[in-house]
Figure 1 (tube, rainbow, N blue to C red):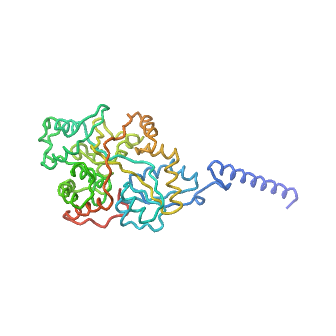
Figure 2: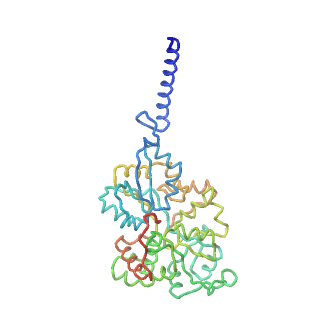
Figure 3: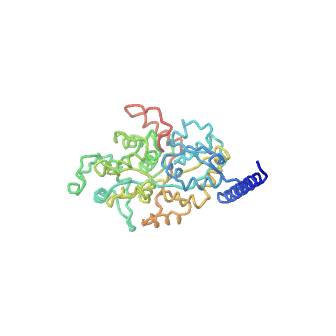
Length: 386
């Protein structure tokens, strides 16, 4: 090989090396790297979490993943029910859990010895329904509309109607609007598996106990029969809150006139570019009065889990992205802005909000009700919903 050819090859290799160094340095700056290397698929630290499935679309969002990647983190999650996370899910190798239930999170924190928890956002329990239904309930004194146009279900009056076995076609005006022989009953998820059903139980038991949180065995015994009826008389109930909500959207008023959901499900769908058309003009978001907040709480089980919790709590970009999925971040202005950006009226934070019972009390009521089902629950799937 001639000297000239060798010099040419050497110059080419040197040029390639220089370009490579520039790419690495610039790439490191673009991605926020501190070591001078751009985080790629093999450079990110994988952090494992177990979450309620209502948060899975948020964690799957490329924009959310990009924020974590900028900090050198690849968050990998699987879904499970809050009760399953607190009782039966194997947490070996898990860096954080993110249930939608504050009582479940507190139990996990105590047992794991976690020093801190993070609550980056929350969602009130709500009811998905329809205009003819709220009109009927209003005529019966079971629902009312406030000055801002928001609908509220009077839980005390609702429980009286359920206890009396009231049917829709017995309400004034039903013949012209919803002439159904079905009992007035909210459709919920399976109380044996789902946190949204457990929060429904928390609300109903509070009202049945004279507007007081259940805190004793005697109080629990006094209300357990009507509480069990709320769930047993529904017939089949799904384990995931997505299932009855999807039925509500696709099957309409005949199948699911009242569905207990999280507010975030309804609002998140309204703000979804691909799913907003499913919310039709006759669909209504109503709030139980009183209601309860589903407080989504990160319990770190490792230092890396703590990093995830800190980012969710403090990064304003993640707060804005959470609001796009209908969750309420700590700063209410972020939530209001997300709604306004999508042409939606800001939803005032519910005022009549109660605390759920302790984890042990709530679990005791659920266990009693579970024992009254005709068939035992199959072995829980680790990927069932909240």
